[in-house]
Length: 169
Ligand code: S3P
Image (cartoon, rainbow, N blue to C red; front, top):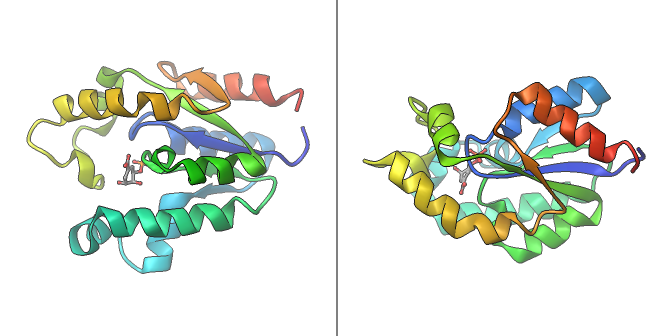
């Protein structure tokens, strides 16, 4: 495989970050997270950005970050779960990258995120219901990815499945 970026999209808690780190170790390529870039640029955590400046502001910064980072080559990019909602983000991500949707069922997502507090959209009374609803409404956007990967399996296996796809790139 050449310098095509490996871009991971999918719902919060679907294993993007762990898969990204795993692939980074195997392929010896940098793993970059859009959320990390946003937090660094803003000098504050994602929850603080949502709380103090609102989601629309977060999406604006996210879009700028996506545009910039998409210009790089040879990276593994772990994207925030809502990145797919903006069609221009998808165009940018696909410029130098192959976009993988890590598709996980709601129950697995819930198990992965329960007890965590750094995701403002899931800090609600009934996170289980919120996951199901949001996942359903976002599905058509996630499915615009180049490749859909079944993420209801161990991280090592998810990484293997992605490697299998890119080996002929
Ligand atoms: C979001 C997902 C989060 C983060 C923000 C919004 C979303 O990233 O970007 O809280 O809209 O799905 P992760 O998918 O890495 O949790």
